[in-house]
Image (cartoon, rainbow, N blue to C red; front, side, top):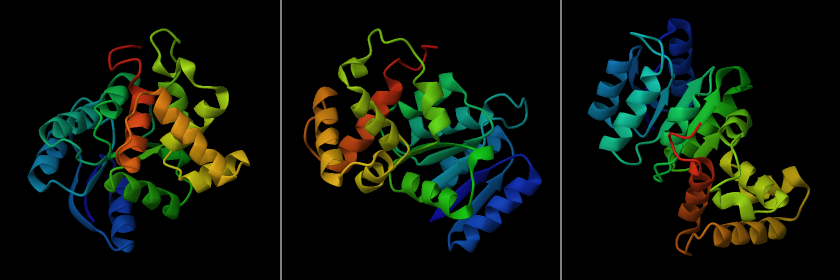
Amino acid sequence: MRVVIAEDLFLLRDGLVRLVEAYGHSVVAAVDTGPATLDALLTTRPDVAIVDVRLPPTFSDEGLQAALTARREVPGLPVLILSQHVEQLYARELLADGNGGVGYQLKDRVLDAGQFLDAVERVAGGGTALDPTVVAKLLGRPERADPLATLTERERAVLELMAEGLSNAAIAGRLFLSEGAISKYTTTIFAKLGLAADDDTNRRVRAVLTYLGAAGPHDQ
């Protein structure tokens, strides 16, 4: 894969470069500011980008804003946000554009290289890779106007694990159910969310994005 890395801390940026390259991928740009991130994303159009939220010059949300702008220019450009913080407003906007290829991982919850590279590869493949803490914060909203209101507690649990990027087999293991049962739950979830039968992978991504974007990008 061709990878862009946007991180202002030198040691972490250098460590990410070495990690990605150790797994056989190519880092086409390693940058440390918001403007440089946007330029790298639009110029190189990588297979996936790993982007910190808070970058110079203001250390607010330049990285996330650069990712949003780039994805408006290049729909579906795969971006994995790697941050210490959950920026709910713009994170929902990133996750709700309907194109897939998005992830949001918290730095202090990345436990090993394999876990992290698995998330990177899922995002590059057009899927999602969301830390459970991120999912919980993004879903902490009122039930009003919520298309998820018809989901049962079990269906919500399945969808939350789908949002983390887990396969049906992995979800089955986590919930101590059969893979067949999980397949039935996902079919019911798709129906309740009004997702027509087409490509199952695409429906899976759309279900997750519908779930996370239900409150809209400007609803706190």
